[in-house]
Length: 124
Image (cartoon, rainbow, N blue to C red; front, side, top):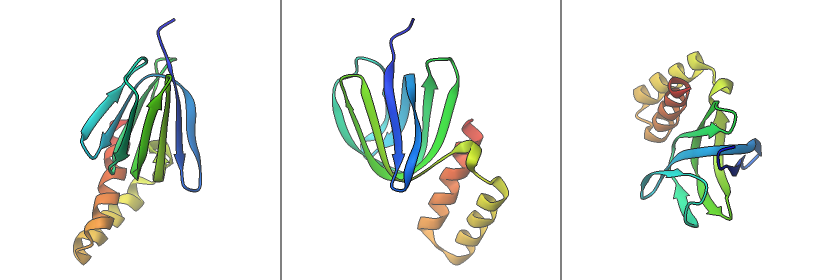
């Protein structure tokens, strides 16, 4: 069996995903980071962006994450997000409408959120 790390992806309102993984890629304030079993301990600020989790079973889980923190120690990775949703929970048509509305209104925050949601869907 390949080395694994335990991953907890939690949003402010719920537990989004929990399980064993071989790799997690997330966007931090310092840039994109990949975490594998045995990684050095870390604590960082999550930026809005897709988070990709390669599961121990060989699958891929993608989530749209909007802000929060990432912490890794003792092969346990915690992603504590302000907002997070799995890519298969995202309504693409709704996200596309949200993006167009945000562009028309000049709402940069809403535009970024809709863009991240659409990139998460595209990445799955």
